[in-house]
Image (cartoon, rainbow, N blue to C red):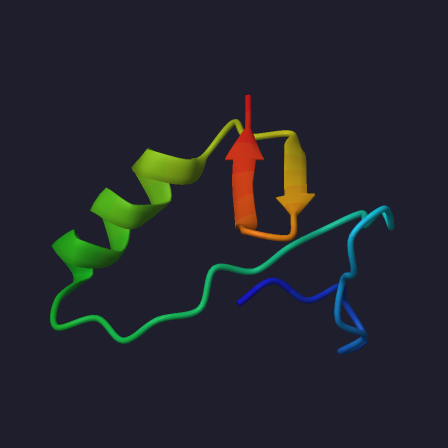
Length: 55
């Protein structure tokens, strides 16, 4: 789920300044693993088939 701060959903062609990765985690190490996986991404590509984060 990608949402701009303030809760407004991001639509194709729009831009955002910050994003949250939301999920359920069983441990702190799992949270760190997900954080490390996505840190440093600075863009988002949104198409009709879905979205992906870009470096």
